[in-house]
Image (cartoon, rainbow over all chains, first blue to last red; front, side):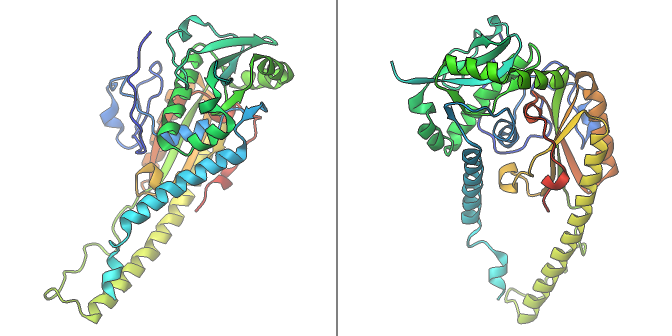
Length: 102
Length: 268
């Protein structure tokens, strides 16, 4: 059994991500010519946002005893957004060029 | 023993257990299968101290925990998907025990079989479209005149320039949104099903270019290459839009009740 390299947390998008080795060589819509040769197949790296779109918004929901409700999922997504928004707002504060233009 | 629940990854008709031997699940434990009603659930026993309802609510707010758990969940689903068609479960589906899972499989078996039939021989691909700036409005910036101290005139000129810039960005955005609709419509012609996800926030994508389409497409296994070619061609036809293709994914976006979302998922 192959062991896949553990991917580090990623909030950055990757260009084109191959999740499963088998099928065709990677394609890229921006620069197809540079992708004619198959990239190292294990250099896979899925952006967390793409994954969350699927594991939080997709997948089958069944009713069970301890099930995360849709409301909980929404809460997760909202608080994630709030988290990144507040971080980037903090980073921008004081660095607004229009503030120097009064 | 600590109180535990059973985390479910996926449901399939048959799952060979041997390839699961090396897999570590979300709780770090072994992944196992349990069968009922001719269906097999892929599962893991997890401690409720970490995976109970209250703990989940707390942990899901922890980005590192969420990242590791989402990847572990996906890793198991991806490994099982190589064996054959499966229905992925949403993250954090936890039952109190095998009996209740068996009851759920029995009760929903018709739904699961119908869903499995829909996705057999098919894979999910994702296409994201970003609006890209084609050229800077106004071309080169005017040379700054005079030394450092900005006059009131320079400030007004700056604001005017900034206003024009914003207006032209707005127009460009309208055009690229139209492109996104055309692209989605064209891609939809080549696939079995489509689902539009909400666009990802720029803070999460790490790119400034706004996302204008975030869609999933379900297509036959052997159509992947053709679909990628269509994506490439559309990217060339729409220079104001950058397209990204991801996949193949297990059919996360299509294993549900078959509801289809229309393009209204795209927000301006």
